[in-house]
Image 1 (tube, rainbow over the protein chains, first blue to last red):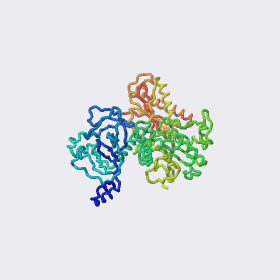
Image 2: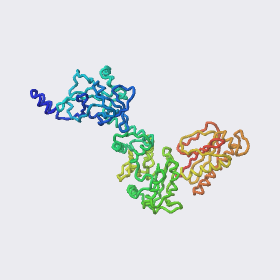
Image 3: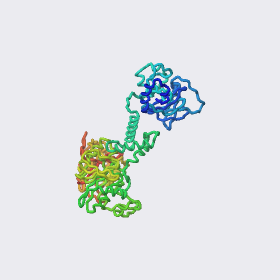
Image 4: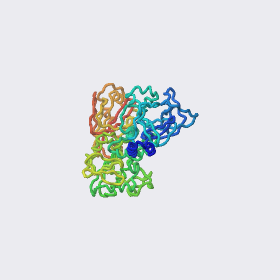
Length: 446
Length: 154
């Protein structure tokens, strides 16, 4: 309650003092607007934005208060004239003139309401809101949250949920229809009870994105990559803002996954990345090193690791079982040819000039078995010292992810190293995370 | 299965069948399989040993086997007799031998076991833990599936 109001009623000062105290705490913000010369307010939590718009597309056979549909940056929303809805006089503006529009969000529905004029955001104390008086005329009491006085004006606060989530209201009272034929029916899809509307809507979109990632890219969000997904989802929301968050095609799914892939995917590891991986290697001096590299793709990472191990442990006998279920990719792997200019320094000593370009020395090539193999079938791999499996687990169905990760546990020697994709985590017990730059690595049983 | 092994088998199957059947042979999409699977009626098997262990299985239904044997022998054969079985066995042997020869040229050492042939109805091959490469071949005589399972000796 404002100072001005308190001054006006000096005779009831005691009451007003109490009210003033209450008013100091602002815990309810509303967007105020006018309809036929009277002031109204709507909870700011329901207001997505305000806009000026016109040229609504008329929808035949719709209720009289539905002015049409409007294209809000790609989203088609329906536009409702609150004045018609409440049987208030409304001046028809000239063809093409812009109307003041409040874009509201109730549950997951977004729509626009036309009002005479939008005023400002007013902060009040929730405790100051008084229940509507039953004899209020033009707006059905059902739709009024309450009345509040602020800066010497009375505001009628509309209950948007009651107005626009009709199914719930219908269950409560059937007579509502007579008083306000202007209720929008069929806006509410279901009588879902949502405690926190914003969050629930967010979860739905996130779930939808998860499903499309699975459908378009076979990417399954699970405990392995959940941390990345949540972060990426927030980022995505920021990037797309009011645009549609959902992924409508393969390209968008790919765009969403852009930040998922580990460094140097599909190319030889850079000297920096190789150094970061090299720093994690346990001491293998002078013995055999068995490596399993599921999902090796075209084999770039396999050759990178082979050279790295050869460089770090020149005397060790390295054997790498590299496999992929993409026949085309894996078929090319054993006979990769490079242009020497494009090769990081680390690999040059292990390459030799061939007819078409530079290839790896037989010593490196012979240490690798490239296999056409599906990791979901039995994996006849001897106990491994290192498992390199970047950005592969996430592209398996969730149940198979668990199975493969469990298999990693069985196939790794005690103290062996597991390298997952940069944005992948090992959710199972028995592994200890190793700190490293941009590498997600785990040591078994340590 | 090592990628180096795939092509020799696919090429050998293609060349040999084209030559002995005197017809256009088409290769279907290659894929991997690890569950037990039904045998179409006639199955010839050749074992492999050496650097690796494994086997090659040639699978077809009876009418296909009869038509292939008829073409290869240049006469109409109507019953699953010794001649038909010997012919299918020989086909399996030729394909596997040519593949192994190609592999030998690439520096891999494989030995063959003598082929064996199985005929019957409702047969099934189960080796759960072995992943096999399936090479489907379409011939005018019918469909032949070549099922190759090879693994490195650990």
